[in-house]
Image (cartoon, rainbow, N blue to C red):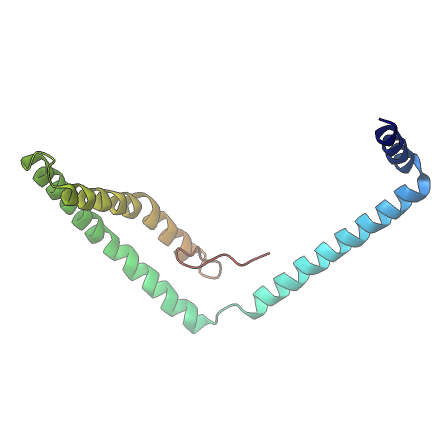
Length: 140
């Protein structure tokens, strides 16, 4: 119990020690300056690595074609989901593979209906800062 009390008294004395506070505030300022410098450096690198007009035009055309293709993909997965559900019901739920395929088409249908168009529209509006599906985020 004496060690705990001594540790608590030492911690309390560090909190009220003006020199300890000055050292803490100096470390805090140094950390904030470092973070600000890192943010400026990352912004500069981002500007330097931005794609050119030709690359942006190609990317924009690809996103536009993918957005035009989305209704066909939605319709395909909706039909496969319905067909899988009907076949599952016809066989009395004895064929698990049909249920799995119907569930997979239902999941992809949901993604194409609710997620993909919003992401594509975002990417068309922000070609320099697109949202990626398959790429890991490695930013700090």
